[in-house]
Length: 143
Image (cartoon, rainbow, N blue to C red):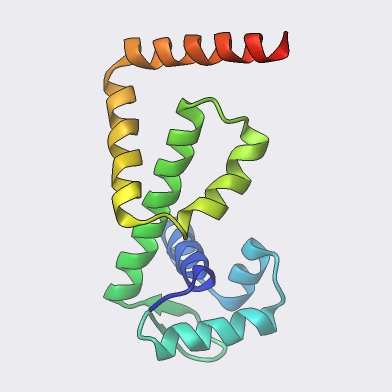
């Protein structure tokens, strides 16, 4: 069983390995704005849970389970960003909301959001109609 914090680490480790080819404790600490000692503790927990292979003072490698979960979290994050953009959530709010939603949404709700995102992307007329409706409702609320 993973925690939201573990999922955030796995997502960041996955991204670092994809972008740089490796991930070190120092890289993770910089990316997550944390102290290296805190990152080391979590990396040890992830290794104990079987998500990474870690040797002190060396880089770390995702296990197949860790890579699958890291990729899943990155994909989930990206889809939630797309969805919130499609429904007009401002960028400054969007990032904070994605972080709050991504770890707490049920699989069924996530699938429904993903289906709706795909529907809007494949149906620009409906997306435009929704945005027009949204603008109209905001205008009414401001009057």
